[in-house]
Amino acid sequence: MSFSANGPRVFPVPADWSDAITETLSWATNYMQASASGVSQHCSYRSDPRRSFEFSVKCEGQQRRVVDMLLAGHGGRWLVPIWPDAQLIPARLPVGSVEIACRTNGFDFFVGGQALLWGAVNRWEVVTVTSVEAEGLSLAAATAGTWPTGTVLFPLRRAQLQDSAEESLWHDNAGIRSLTFDVLDVCQWPSLVDLPLYLGTPVLNRWADWTDQPKASYARLREVLDNDSAAPLTVPLADFAFRSQSTQWKLFGREEHSWLRSLAYTLCGRSTPIWLPSYTSDLRITADLAVGAIEIPIEWAGYALFGAQAPGRRDLRIELLDGTAIHRRITGSVASNDVEVITLDAPLDISVSASRVRAVQIMSLATLASDQVEIRHATDADGVATCTLGFASVVPHV
Image 1: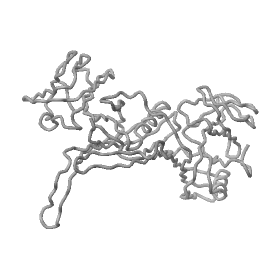
Image 2: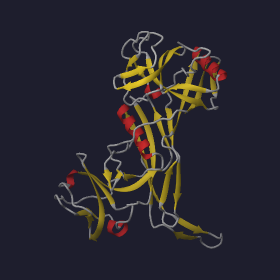
Image 3: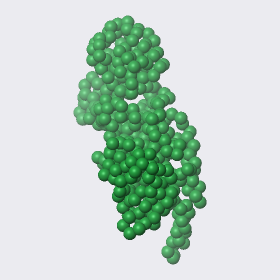
Image 4: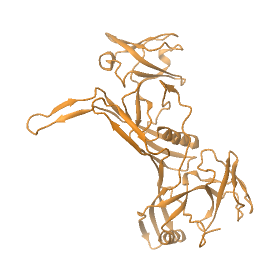
């Protein structure tokens, strides 16, 4: 099967993987902040994000001519393969098949959706999915062709091509074109359900990647009065240090890809707060702690003087080398010479050896800093992708 006058309009020319494919998930949040207190309200306008794919096609010969004909001859909606979800079918698929044996966990297949069996730009077949099981797909109709082992299988999404599909020609028979498709389907994905809870709110419990240097900063709400003559007058408004923090995520394999996507759906743009660790060693425990300990000696860091149990600086994640994590709130702190003692809101459930502590991190309640999440796919989702998430702290409600 290939193109026909009344057939589906598939974009069959493969993306070029020498450049990353950028997938963008876009939510919409109505964000309002009280200037006097810094308290914010977050109202989501989209339960599921808008989704787009930006990629390049490097074409020579027949493929270049096909792309040019497609773009000149059709300006409507396309069926676009989800390139990061490519897989090879493990067995020959004879004509008349109503099932396809394939992997489905972590792939963008859905009931009522479509999939593409791809052999070449002019040899492919679109099938409609009626059931998605762990072992494969059930189809609404039998396949019209025979497909050999190793045929590429893609999920399909309806999408609109943006107009900026400019071609850069290398010579009369080859060039490169950058394309952006806006997906028109509702793209649902499960949220994370296994995050630990602290004070009723999920905690981000994975370490981010340190390949690129993460960044963090503090900002305060101020009103600046300046008449352009004397020194400007700065009036502090909310007594709260708003922490901004970037986290980089390098994803290896489909399980990590799926986890990151589920995290994005959990956060739903800027609308949903999460307890965010600092990913730094903010405090250092100086002595072993017994079961039931409620006071913890720490190396002097100025916490009693400057932290002082302030909102955004009083919630701890004590993580051990074996992965165990303890979440507690600081209710008191005193300093004595080179040591400080912090008091927790609840005793420890386990003993803690100071030498087995990986990090004591201060957690802040935060949302994403933007409604957009960009995932850069260096390969398909069985390989590598990267994503940078920026977070902005909010005044905690607890």
